Length: 186
Length: 233
Image 1: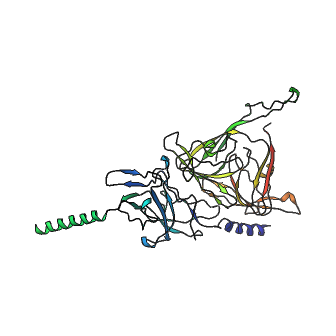
Image 2: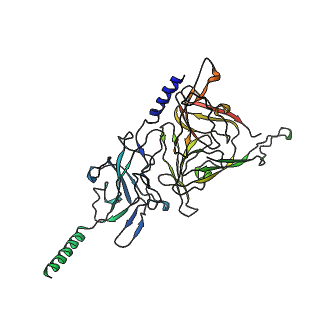
Image 3: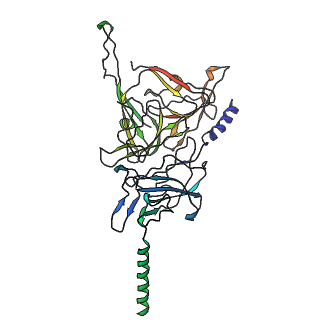
């Protein structure tokens, strides 16, 4: 019987490892998303469905932002308790992942500006990105790891900033040029 | 998990008086409460009593902000969308919300194990009736999280748990934040007295979950019924 026990205990391990990789694609009250506008209107994101949050993933160790692929999106909710928060799935199943460790980043932008962070080029849009984290998605009956937090590989909240309009950028460049010219004449 | 149980059998409600006084029918309800200590992190617990309803906002009306409740979908063999407890310092808004988020409609009946994640150690108090009478708790095929329907800590074989060959039992170690070593059920046709759960070293172990403690079961065969009849009398 001991032999059978050994075989069964060896079999038991893979049984808990089947399935697709899952993570908690949601932030928490201590990792809120904020906005920071030039008019001073800052604080947790508000207004239901006004922002999109994208989960971008890449192989572990990736730091090049262009190498990340968006695998899911979420919006902020419509009730006051959800200010500064979003929930894109808890658990969220990562397509094509079977439990391999990944690098990830959350990118957020104004909902009306586009379907992806890259397409959101509307001059009125707010945009922001998180730090790059690392997580090992779990499968089967294993508990689902959180992306946000203070543990190893987890990320904190971040802020969305307005995209400078081209005219603003041009004015800024003109200003810099003027300063440079002034210093040269001096 | 330290669990303290007080059952107030004094709360006896008479109901359903029959057509004649000689044939009066009484319903005896045992009302009580169960305190369940949660460690910071994940805890595998169950609802030990029938509340006025078993909505999560009824059975656990208060929890630390950002607590999460994970139920298991035995059909999909995966965790369902978690509920989150929002503590926004407003009693009207505080509570468990689903992912939308709307106030949660999640119902957790006695007999189901579920994970609750608590950012801090705390104690939750369940209030309600002790389930009585003929009780059936389905043990579906493959993985499921189960618990005793009755708030009673007793060896599973003594309370009718339907073990079958190659079934696996795993408790949750909230201190270590991991599953404990699995126990395997052996059926020995030549000597049924040897039937039971065994640990990896070959020793027979009768799992004895605490009151309100959930556990993981792997059922290699078709769905089973864990039936028992219980009365506080």
